[in-house]
Structure formats: structure tokens, C-alpha cells
Image (cartoon, rainbow, N blue to C red; front, top):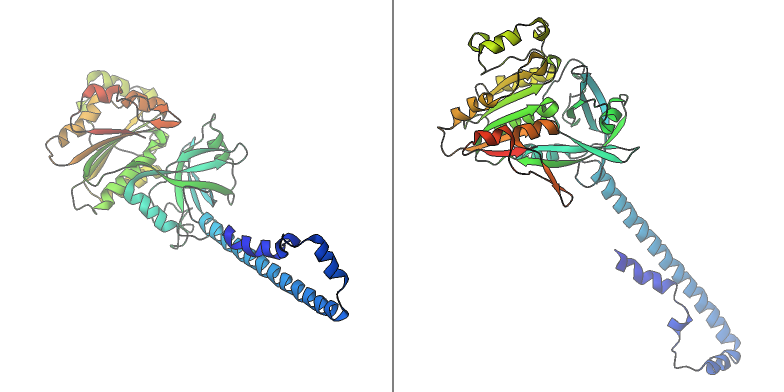
Length: 389
């Protein structure tokens, strides 16, 4: 665009050296100027007036052109900023925040301006597990969060929010971390506040040949587990026999209220030492039969893809934890399947990931997978690829 502006601009503001040849002596110029006739003076005046008009026209053209180019650039920027993209932050509005537990909430946000977000979301869903970055504007820092799969109706509170296909909302399960600047900022926002987001960032691509996924999730790591289930099972519409088994660990039962195991042993089949621990009053499960929102979403996926998604719940306060047998129960059942890609995904707090598969590493400003360690390495599973989220 600059070359188009440079020509008219330099021409409009050309100095005498551009109009007169340097070979003409200055004395000759003064002489001819001193002896000009009145008619020549009138012609020169007319020529000067015409030159001024031409200069004015050129300036007007350049100004109009520059204004048009500026308007086009601003239009392009506005169009880009109205659609979620990995390069600039897009404004979203907080339209709903529903408590999941005493520490977590379900956030629903939609773009402030209409854009082409539906196409962006669909491309990301087809790829695998993805996230977006939230900006904390006061400190100018960001944190990545994983969107939950879209559903037609989240709850009675959000029923009217998600009506209409032009809303293009995103939903997030976010835990309030007392030491997390971004999570504390988000939990402190009032409804209607503007939030800046950037993405999508693909965290893990799920290859088309993968048919079996074991997802080990800790806490809010259930969000990418829901993503993986949504991508895997919707991709072939349940016709290829794909399976995903989720092991979900939480500190408290309130985070997974109402969740029941699909494959773990019944209390009668548990070891004697575990029966003693589970029978103590301090570790008894709550009597409230209602189900939490995330448990409901897992149940919804189960109903949509019967027999293809199973979930086992582990709760610290009930002294149940993910052990080697919990992992082997699913991996052994898949060993007989040949020609099927197999993937183990681990998501959750850093300590949880380190215990299961070893820590991730930073090198040259990038986060790397690091060597496989933890209890998954001890199992020495053959034919299974492992990815830490």
C-alpha cells in the first residue's frame, strides 16, 4: 500500500529542484525573470493558479485514498477481532456462571460481536483437544482453559442463553485457585463483563486411526476428557466401535456428585482393607442423590453413545485413588484389538500428571512432553501412546 501513496504525495510537495534543470545557471534564471512582459506575468499567474488547483486535487485524492485504505484496514481488524483467532484477542461477554461445587463454576461466554466462530469451533472439534487463552488485563497475563463440548441446554439458568444458532457460546469449567491470578479475576467478574480470549490452541490431535482412548483426569482435567470423548465418538457417529474410558479423580465428592462407577469392583468384591476404610463414618459418601452438572454431561454422552463411553470416579475424601489395576482393567480389554490406534491422555494439576506419567519439561521457551515416568511407565503398556495435557 505504501508505494501507491508515495507517488502522488512526493509529486504534490515537489520543490524547485524537481521542476528546474540543474544545468541552467541561476543568473540566467534571474535575468529572464527580470525582463518578462506583463502578458507573460498574466500567463504565469494563470499557470500558477492552475498548478495550485492541480496540487489541491492531488492532495484531496491522496487523502481520500489514505482514508479508504485506513477504513479497509480497520474493517479487516474489526472482522478479525469479532472471530476467535490465535493472533489477536476477541471480546466475549460473560452471560452465565453456575456453581459446580464450593470451588468450581461453569462459565458461559459468547462473542460481543457476531463473527464466523462456528466454523472455527468445528475445525477445532474435528482435530482433537484444544484450549483458549484468557487475558487478565490488569496484570497482562494469560491462562489456557479448555472449552466444554456444546450441548443444546446446559441448565434451567442457561436455557435462554444458548437459544439460537447465532449465539456461538463457549463453556468452561474453572476452579477458583486462591493463588491463581486469572481464576480469581474470572470469579470476581459480574455478569455482562467483557472477557478477552485468544485461540484455539490445539493441545493434542487425535489421529483418525485412534479407536481406544484411556483418559486419566484430575479435577478440572475432566474438561479435556469430555472434549476427547466428544471428538472421538462424534467423528464416526458411533459406527466404528470407538471407545473411551475415563478415570476421574477429585478431592471431594461434591465435584462429581452422583457419579457412579461403570467398571470398578462392587463393595463386596473389594479387598478387606478397603472395606474397612470405606465403612468409616468419616469417608461415607454423601446421601444427596442429585447429580452434579458435569456428571449429568457425562451421562448425556453415555446416552448418545451407549456402550462406548465408561467412567470411574475416585474421591480423595473417600480414600479411593487411581491405581495400576484401574488402568489395566481397560488396557487389557483392548489388547485383543488389532489395527486400532490406542491413546492414553493425562490431564490435571502438575503433581497429578507427574505421578501418573512423569512431569512435562520446559526447553528453549517451549513446554515439552518429557520422558514417560510414573505408574504408567511401570505398567510397561505395549501399543499405547501416552500424551500429557
